[in-house]
Length: 470
Image 1 (cartoon, rainbow, N blue to C red):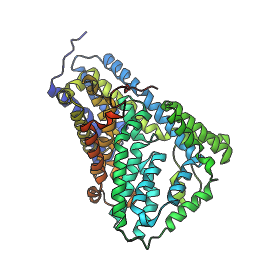
Image 2: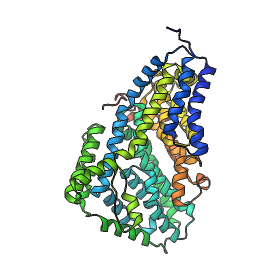
Image 3: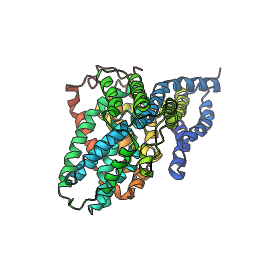
């Protein structure tokens, strides 16, 4: 058996740059999908690791062992896809949308736009879908008031991404929890120590800001049209909210992620089949490939035609391919060597938080992908947190700020590029208006530096193990 070599820091950095560079550069410069690029990265990484004395069989074994860690998050993501399709077919998401849009008041447009997009994103799990649907409708209202498009877009984008960061249906939260290996719903509950105060502060800012705007000439025709389209396409009543209530009850009972999601999907299945009138076969199809709404309004059809297990295959494949790459690099000792300097600096809770946010921001800059940033930072820092006996709940919370919200400050990142395209505003011009990212970071710094969350959180005190229970 060939003798194994410990990689030098230079060689480890070189290998890591090659491995991730072949993914990041085409993604940023050419807009290529990241999932297939991981396979090319495997092809380049394997010979670089073999130079250290590892056989292909050893590398393959390490790769597959590491890939096994992604089975839980993959399963959760696919179950979420099924639930989203069924909730759209059942009228659950449309009912929430109607309630939100019906409650808007022109006098409080800014704060209500923020809260509506937050709630919509929370219950749909997509910041893109929120900005491309409810956000577009709200944009029309704001522009009819004579407001600057950048000002109107600010609460819409902020609300959409805060809701995304808090939603169990979101790719972001699932990828974050899966990369670190923690329970999804517990991770969301823990990061509330940062997101909830940040939301309250943002609401106060938007309330004061909105009170100074003229709202007397607001045109609500676009909102009225959306509500009318929803009522025409669905049978709406509080029956459609049963799937949502089922999941909330299971969360209160502290049921684990997969059973909670599947129960919510089953409730959506029954409401879709027995109340909305879709056939059993159709409902099964919606669970698999997503719900497709046939409406006279193309806009309404676009809002609610989504979900399904197959809609999550891109995220599932990213888990497989990314975990495989990290398996190769970990087996050959590349990850440990690259992270060694950072490991020495991440000795305290505060320094670990700063490093996590910074690494997440750098990953957003270089990869232009929020989901890739979660996978990259989670897999890179998880062993560091474990080695230094740091709290992995802190890792998931810091990743939300560093990997998701900080991406709004990077104009070429896919997140701001996409949502700004929906709202017809320039992502470069929007950067000064993304102050809610700084609010979230300031709250994170305060909570971490003062340890105030340890007064009321067993997770913060380390009394709840940060390991997935699935």
